[in-house]
Length: 94
Length: 322
Image (cartoon, rainbow over all chains, first blue to last red):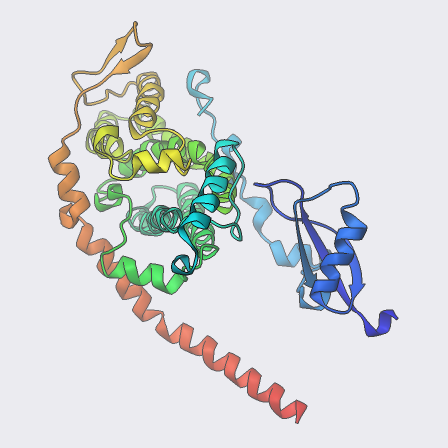
């Protein structure tokens, strides 16, 4: 019964050297069971070499609706980008 | 931990570890790794992290004196990036089981090192140009190579840092270029900055391969992917055209294109100066460390306040539960 089982978010590392990536979620009784379920649900075709499971309730998320105030004023800083600096053609590969 | 494992088993683990590295696979935090590999990584990554953070000092010195508001915004953004890069790197060392507090303590005790280049002062505005162009330029040569390092978290940190840093070198070169288009005094100021920063930048790649204490094993473990001398050559080759383009002269009478090698030949570094600065006697070593210690101590009340706030929240939660 889902109301008695915790929700887990599942992250999979597809290959050594890459970051774990979020793939979805599932219900499980404890972290060990969540790992086994994640293996059965998300890696049936060798999608990964390592799985992380995290209690969904442990994730604190920012909201896209708050973008404007949360990220302000990032958009008016074009000088953070390499393309902002006009250099002579001969050295432009810097 | 190692003491409990029989030698035969250790040899087997080490063979598997080396096979993984030879196959160009990354080592991840929970993998078995030789203690010396872990130690070597902590030393190198923390040295890199400390360099990012100490490197904020010479540039921070010019934030309030930048010649225009635009240059000030750029410099602020760059120094902020360096702080962020220090954080990525400290986090990478934490995946190896060493805490941030231990790393900072080692820096304050003088046990941990940082790039010697930051023991030179930024005397003029042109120095900010030279630092971005040459010091960040040299750092990027090194970091591009380290994107292929064998330790996963370090490699991923390098990829992120290289991406963010692409503007650092360009803004420095842009400062130099602008000065070179200016008055005679401004051009002289740019040349003077290059004269003072060229050799210390060359030293950033470390001793010659034959004299480098950690190089051979670091290459075998693919912590380092290219040798000090290879990287230094790459830096020289790319810098010459950049200097010529804006009319600057690299202060090395022996600098000459070698058709046969397909590289520039260049003069010898003053290794006595190198050892002097590495061992703590450069122009600003004491000042850099004292400043870091002072600011760290002055920030104690913030750490205390966070701890007190956490404790208060815990007590409230305890009361609510009871």
